[in-house]
Every structure is written in C-alpha cells, then in structure tokens.
Image (cartoon, rainbow, N blue to C red; front, side, top):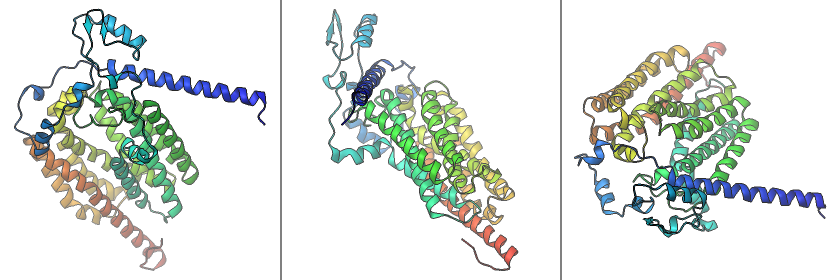
Amino acid sequence: MFSKHAMKQWYCGTTNYYKLSNVIEHSINQFRFLALQNTAPHPDEMVELNEKTSKDLVDMKKKDLFTSRIIKLESSKNYNIREKLLNAPVNLSKKDSKKILAIHNTDLGNGWIKMGAGNLVKTYMDLSKFRLTMLIATSTIGGYFMAPVAYDPKTLACCVIGTSLMSCSANAFNQMLESPYDSQMKRTQNRLLVTNKISPLHAFSFANICALTGGSILYYGCNPLTTFLGLLNVGLYAGIYTPMKRHHIGSTWVGAIVGAIPPVMGYVAITGQLDLPALVLAAIQYSWQFPHFNGLSWNLRADYSRAGYRVMCVTDEKLCRKSTLRHSLALLGICSIAAPLSGLTSYTFAIDSLPLNLAMCYFGYKFYSTPDAKTSRNLFKFTLLYLPLIMTLMVISRQDRVKSTTATSTGEVEFVN
C-alpha cells in the first residue's frame, strides 16, 4: 500500500498538472483571439491577379473559414471588451453593454472537439507535418551515407528515428504557436489547432514527449553531438524562427539554418565530429532552402501578408528574387568547387551535378527576371526534384572515392562496408 507521504505527493503532482494544463489552455485561448496583429494589406490583396491557378478558383468557391474564427468589435473603443476577454474568455457573454461580439459558440473557451483513439495516428501525422518530417528523414539518411566510414545499421536506425521525432516535436510546437495566424491563411486554416480537433495542451505534451524520446534515442544510439544538434534545431525552429517570422525578414535565413542541420546530424551520427565536409554538406542544404522557399511563398504572398508574416515575398520582393538567383548560383559553386576540394565528394561529382545545377540557375534566373505564378511554380517543383537527385549523386560520388582510397591502400578494387 502507498504511504500517506506517497499519496500526498501523487495528489500534489496531479493537482499541479491540472493547474499547468489550465494555464496553458487559458493562455493559448487568449493568444488565439487577441494576438492577431493588424498588418497593412499587401497589394496582392487589393488587386485582382492574373496568376490564379485552378486550385485557387476551387478554393474561392469554398466557405471561407477565416470569417468564423475572428472576433469583430463593432465599436471604435473596445478596451472594455478586451479586458473582459483577458479575465474570463470562457464566460464572456455575446453582448456586453452596447458592443456586439460576433463570436461562434465553438470558438469560445475550451470548445475542443473530443477525439477518438482511432483518429490519433492521423492526428499525430498532421501535427508533426508528416511529409515534411519524411523529407527531413531522407536528407538525414543522405548525410549519413556521405560519411567516409563503415556503416552501422543500428546507428542509422537510431539516427533516423531520433531525428524524425525531433522534427515531429518542432512541427508540433510550430503549429501550437502559430494557430492564431494559421486561421487567417487559406493554406493552413484547416489545421488541427485552428479547427479545434486537438487541444493546445495535447499538442504541447506531444511535442515534449517527441523531443525527450528523440533526444534520448540520439544520445544513447548515436552520440552527444548529434543530440545537441537535434535539440538545437528544435530550439531554433520553435523558439526563434517561428516568432521571428512575424517581426523580421531575417527569419528566412534562420529557417535555412534549421533546414541545413538534419543532413549534418546524419553525418555526425556515424563520424562523431563536425569537420569541413560536414559544413560543405550543410552549405548545399542551406543554399537550396532559398529557391525552394521563395518559389513556394511567391504565390502565397496575400496569405502571408494577411497573417502578418514578414517574409521576403511580402516585405521585399526584389530581395526575394535576388536571393533566389544568388543561392542558385551558390549551389553551382559549392557542388563544382567546394565539395570536391573539401573531400566530401570526388571530382567526378562536379561534372555529374553540372546539369542539375545549370537547370537550377536557369529556373532561378527565370524567376528573377519574370517573377510570376508560372516561374515560381516551376522553380518550386524543380527544387523538389533537385534535392533527392543531388543527394543521390553525392552518395554515389562518396562511395566511388572510398573505393578508390581502399584500392590504393590495399590493392583491391572493392568497397569494404
């Protein structure tokens, strides 16, 4: 039987847990409705663009969920309403003095939808941005096979699983923090926290469990340096990149660093060190982020502006085009010069990757010279093709170099795994 002291500790722990859960839910409910900043509309919101796609036309016919997720105050002075919202968002009546609030019942307080256990898997996949997590896992595998050492299946499995869990954590934190702004964008207005399919506490708990589990797997299955890089990436993405998007254009550069770390984690997991080839590997992934994100965000300028995101495509379109071209050219230089000289790849990689890099420069230049829906879409689609192909060429080139080194030292023309 439990002692009185143990029962008292259990009771205190349970009480503190519920207090914490109430604080988190209360804070995020307030943040959800009251933290929406009034930002100046982007010109794309005022002008009928000719850059409409078939998907855009279909979306225009759908019900705009954004109108059901904001609070409209029919008064020039609303500080009394704001004060009541801050103090008691759950018990707020729909009419207060002579000021009318247009609030839907499902948006008040803790109106979270009860979810069955059968939907948990899909819910967690959506919360962790499954496709993005798979892309990160793939780049981690590519980085792992770039290491000039014998491969260990156990280390590879731990690295991929741990990195994927860290990605799940970062994405869950991101959705939890951005739910008030996701409700204003067509692309994100159906996300879990926006539609009340999952509570903020549930998302918060999921993110922490993934981070702790992923960190433990990386620490015991790989090495402390890989664990540090994983935790650093979660902190950069959730703690710096996510809030910075609404305040400074530099968030794109921080996001590029976040995207460059996963392949380095794969490399470090087996080598245990952060050397020059690892940094060159990160540089390739870093420069790839700019044409990829700029090509994606260009057709979403109105959405980003409506949500108040200070990204390049909204605040500085010229810089958006310039940075795309610069980093497209940078990829050509890194793959042709830096990668072979650093020992990351063989010199044949410079020739093998030339068609891909020239194509990247072409699409980057087309977007720079004629920025529209077509050129940005073509650029974005090519970046999705570019990354797996360039990583495959790098892995082949790495194995060729190891074969050559082995043959020179032992006299055998055989790759020793």
